[in-house]
Amino acid sequence: MAQEENTTPPKEPNFAVRTIESAAAGSKAIAIGMKTVLKYAGGPRPTREYPDEVRPLAERSRGRLYFIEEKCIACNMCVKACPIDVIDLEFHREEREVDGKVKKVPVIDKYNVDIGECISCGLCAEHCPTDAVYQSTEYETSYYYKELFVMDKDELAMTFPEYIAKKAREMKGK
Ligand code: SF4
Ligand code: SF4
Image 1 (tube, helix red, strand yellow):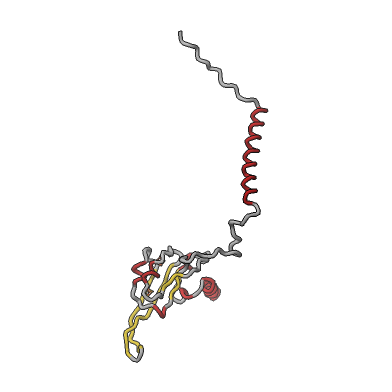
Image 2 (cartoon, helix red, strand yellow):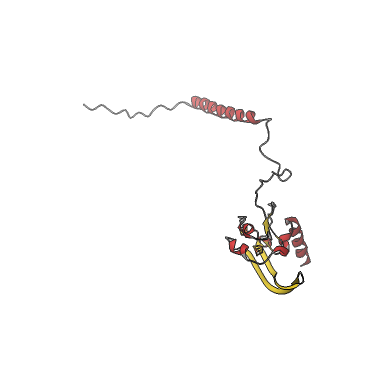
């Protein structure tokens, strides 16, 4: 004969027992948390009060691009190397006297970089044969207006605060 199935639900602990159990679990969690706090209290702080305290940069940090027009030979290597096409170079050649000889030299009409889009990969600087374009360690280049991130050849020779001050003057003059 088949044994009769026990359908009685298991007995739930009463309210007082549940309260004591939750309080015990809560106290255990607090104790674990406090143990961790006490372990690190008084030790060296892992965080810094940025921007008052700035973390020293790694030797090979790649920051904002700079451009030195006088060094540029308009070889186009940086433009070809850029994986996201944010360098816009235009130039023409002119005859000029160099070391007593008349030579055709490149004249840079435009060298714009959208530093808002730039991914700081460094390929342009790596391919530049004259170091006309290079990566600085400047990284504090955030600003409100996206359109201000397209810097021209003169602006690419300025620090970012200088550039923003110039833009502010230009906007006031409008
Ligand atoms: S750092 Fe990279 S993404 Fe930025 S302009 Fe140079 S090649 Fe282009
Ligand atoms: S690679 Fe250097 S020299 Fe050549 S166009 Fe670019 S910035 Fe000028």
